[in-house]
Length: 400
Image (tube, rainbow, N blue to C red; front, side, top):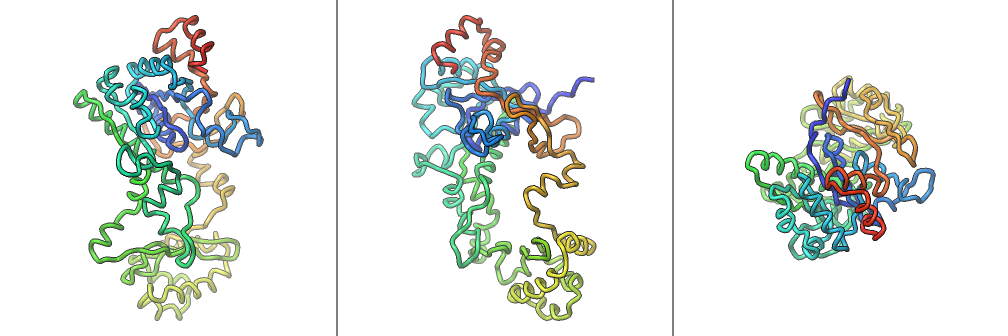
């Protein structure tokens, strides 16, 4: 029985984004879109980031590339050359979406700005995802994940209050910006289908960092409260807020001890310690004392036993897992979260599967492409180019 079509079946995306910004194209590919990963001859810098399969620094074996490029088709185009730019324009004519992450002005200088590309495809939906956006005083600055978290206000709020800020693991803000880009693309496609008009979306990682902070601006507007770093506790260190969620040690690791207005009193029930009752009258002011009592209790139990006891009371405690434990988690295994795909160079690769569960349409997990792997197929299928034309482009280096 043939597999049902994906949710975005029939949508063609030109993905020129690099690094973690390539997460946008990965999401669209998993949902069924045909995503053409267009790389320069030297490949996406993602291919040179460790770790590598087998500790072999081969650009085809970079773990982040194998993850973020999964399910895409690979095409190499040298946009520094007239012939490469001409081919991109022809591919735009046959595509619905273009996603890119070049520095502002790069495409403009090469005649590939949105206004240029809509001459080829008037209803083109395009998302430009960068560190700072397409304009403004910082637009030309170099960027990175830590820069986006710092300028977006996120970094200042992470870590212990008497120490320097702490960067969250990996590139969460860049992924968040890429998620915004994928959402913008779908908004653009909906608008296009309704009106026949395309659109160009400007997505900035700094904006994504600030967007993650939720009601910070509103909180300051309403009562002048400015949150500070709170270490393992949540940021809600306003005196009017109850005892915060926090990470505490137990006998074999750490647990996340969570409470809020709905079940603050259940902490006393869980710990069976009458000393906590007086502290609970003003829990935020007595947070250190509550922590001390909790630590005494937690030291007697392993993580799983703590979680079991707390969850029986509907207290949302959870174990803090080691990364390898997550990979072997029974809950994720039963839900079939991880997917195994066969890669021609890396062998069998386990990768995260669907970030959303779809009832009627499948999530598609496929291997990351080799550099330029599908270039000949794409130029033949979409542009009708003859083998001798393609061979000339290879010989000249335009296709790599």
